[in-house]
Length: 412
Image (cartoon, rainbow, N blue to C red; front, top):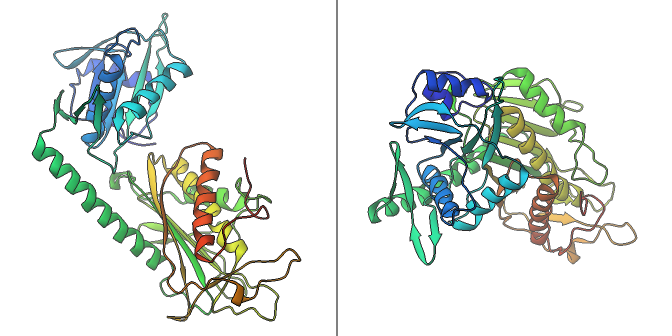
């Protein structure tokens, strides 16, 4: 369970978001902060300005590194005072608020989390807690009738960013992206560092844009095992739903991570790392086809090229759920040849089930890492579209323009 701005304001460790936390905030007269805002009521759609006000509140939080807005909490002098119960809340209201955040804020804000909490009093008092994750795309602007504003939190108030603030926000965005790109590449390199390579290896890694904080401590071994079990048991994006093989449920500790390998006949064929900050990585040794033309030093089976993105998305979703990591993940997929300078071929099959000759394929002399920003908590249908997009980017580099229907599902 994550430690939220409300937990920090109360001086509590991580726990479920419950109504009792709001009562403690009232008791302690917790004051609004950069990342915590009290709202007496939900935005009223009858108010023409409600949508823009909501967008401004969300953008201000995300431009300040994320935060929390609690609807149903009346304040006095910026301090939590009493509960004003939320009388109406359903899926349609939540969707309307999400649509306002998406349509009125540019770039759109993703990953909003709404939680309805209720008291045990006779009136069943209720409040809605909105958790707003950090974003790698700051600054975010609110668009209104041709005007553009970039709000941010300043203590308990919301103010507009000036030109210098906006310039610095853009600079941080680009610097953070460069840093993230380097960090992701290093993560992939460390995943296969020291592994003997006589065949091509496929490597993938993902880092959350909102990492699991250091104060959350090491990941318990049983949590790491649960994540691995989810990866190994089945995969909703594959036609045969087969889970990842060549890894096991007996992970070993590493530097701020757990590593799973399951040597076959003394040879490592698969690796999965689950890091304390929520990052994950995996690597597989390319399987070999039973064909006399097969060359392990250059050939990648089409199955590996298409199933690796499916395993990566399944691992991301399992880790995000098990570690309470919210927000997006920056992902990268690559191939590592055992012989520098030699091309890689993605070996596909003809209609008769025979391997295409390499002369009919596009040699990959410099595989370009396939990158994307993916949501960790979307629907399986949305995740499948991401999987297919990543797989197609891989296949395109090998000269193929379609995925077929043998390995990846067309729809969930």
